[in-house]
Length: 409
Image (spheres, rainbow, N blue to C red):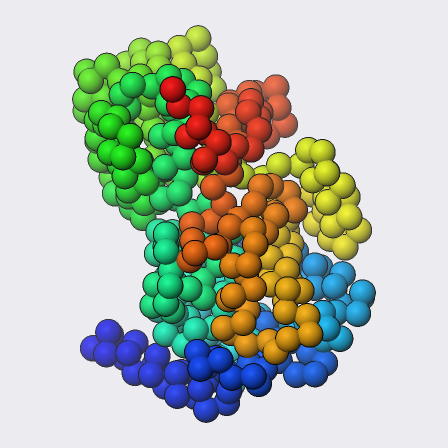
């Protein structure tokens, strides 16, 4: 019944949006829904109340701030950008209802900055069914990962920016070989979405490169991971991937230390927070170093980008969640800039986004050409460093997947 209701909703959206000129697969010269001579309307749903408000609210502040900057400069092709949103409280049911309202009632042109794994997963099928562009998701779930999206049902209208877990897993393997000369690897992953997606990426890249991989799965939140660590220890691997997000990561790392592991380990960028570093720093001291991926960088000209953004972000000028909102809005506007003087349709916007790589103001680049929908493949390397205010310090700057691959002997 649930699947049938989803199909019916998608069908109703397709009919409604097509009837109002939103669907552009036929290449109509008319502008899409949400686009007038003076305005472009975009939306998202995000948690701006409850426990997730400390993420959802600054995310939206960053999006709005970037649009304010663009609008103050006259907009794009004489059109200002109007951003509306609703509080979905991180509830997928609310997120889906919000999407239906935005698509049918408000007639928005695009989604920008959808927040959260469950809400994103809830609306993704409907987004792809009608073809509405969606730029940036504050999540790394594997449902957003497409290597060659040629059609809507393959994710052609989906534009992730931050690294997806599958992408990160692939980068971790190449990092292990290029930077640590790993000839064998072990992975301990949680049986939740984050862990399984990281495992998918690690397994695919290890198989592709012929790297022996010892695999152990644990439950998220597990308090005893000794058996999994023992299995990894017994395999005498050269490099360990801790594919566990947040609270489970310290449990795994502490057990690695308890069993006197001495090989380097790496974990996901989601874990690069001081509270997690504090939990394991003493345990691993003198045994091994724990590394993590990163995708934001504020050096060189990126620092100038941050200074420019700070003028519009106000009290949120140093808030990382506001920064990623700014990034999401930047990517959306870049697509619009490439359409200046042309009709703004869903199809033309997709083509514009694929036209050339787009630079992350505080990071690397994302290249959507040929249907690539994997988020950025440029990541840096951090290690635990309790002298740093964040508990982590960068030890190697942004490196693309292709660059790292080229360093493999």
